[in-house]
Amino acid sequence: MIIKRKGARYPSRAGARIAGLMMGEALLKDLDVVGCCIESSMQADIKSGQSYRLEIIPEAESKVGTFEIRAESRWVRPGEYFCEMGFMITASPKGREFMRYVEYLAWRGSLAARNGVPAAEAPPA
Image (cartoon, rainbow, N blue to C red; front, side, top):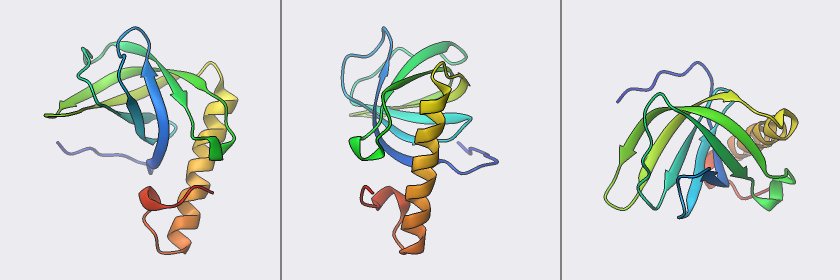
């Protein structure tokens, strides 16, 4: 699968929940203002094209509170021990928290780039 994006996605360490669907652990792998990828330790019954309510629990270092986004499922990639899901963000009721977190991830990524460290491996700020 080739994914064409106009902007950069920022690696994340946030927790995630999909309202009414998942009970296991899930991780927000990456995020930008138009989309995100979630990885779950459990398979989820995600239907492509359907809208979902995602709860994002940022890492404490970000100093950003938990927020919710509404997103449309674009793809699901099941694995043997995990499931990856791609979403297009359609709304964020707490837009300020969402944007603060995106800005934090961009800032952390720029620090990592200046230090020659991949953003996904950058230590928390």
